[in-house]
Length: 133
Image 1 (cartoon, rainbow, N blue to C red):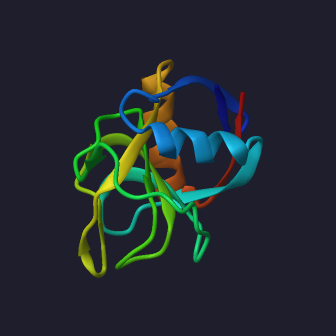
Image 2 (cartoon, rainbow, N blue to C red):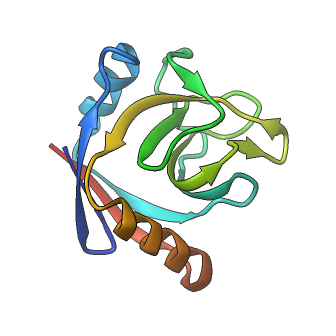
């Protein structure tokens, strides 16, 4: 998979052995275009707010503490549906408290550039994002 953020392309892999149903539904929406903003509560991450979008999946390999490059889907519940991409230290949370998201993909290249884009998103605002296979 290729993830392009603000014009920079990252290599990424799906994690079907960890989150098979989440990977399946996420593949169905590819290519996916959106915008990332910096997280408000979680630390060093960027996220895609998806509102009421329903992926109809439960929890799989859910974590509150993703490592840099890990991509989580929060499938809806006490907060809105969202995708979170960690670029540094993250404790996944919302105004409603701690969240756990399904680790369905991992960025495998240029983590230094991902961090740079994350910090830039904090100070400069939203960036475009495209997920494609």
